[in-house]
Image (cartoon, rainbow, N blue to C red; front, side, top):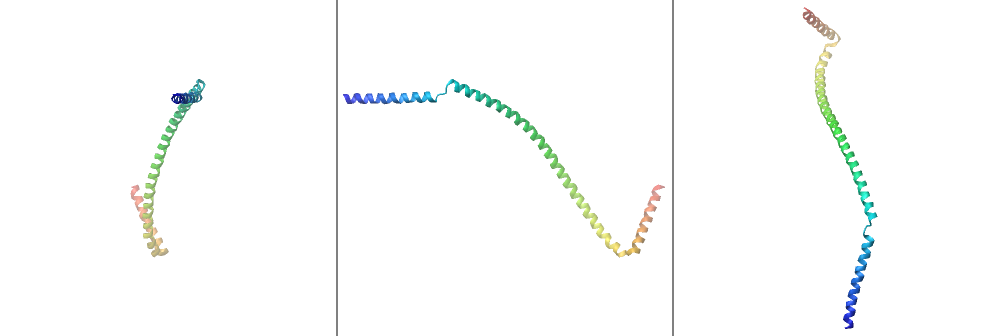
Length: 134
């Protein structure tokens, strides 16, 4: 019977020791009211900082929208400038082609022929001006 009593005491003793360890650990790791106050204060500060960041985010979003509008305007300007440039390049090529057609004609005329053609051009121009004034 003494062996059975020892086992009961041993099991009771082990259970008591385990419970005592749990109580000590709970006491050590359970936050006190000071810790809770500290955590609440930290949470309040973080909430305030979050509100400031949200306001800043909103203002940054507005600035981003304005910048996006400006970028769209600049892209449109670039697009329209490219179209105008392409049109101007076509006109330049057209004028160069016409110049190339005229240059052989002028080269064939020589100095005397050039003076004669220029004189005929001026006479035609004067006659048109006289008709326009009447």
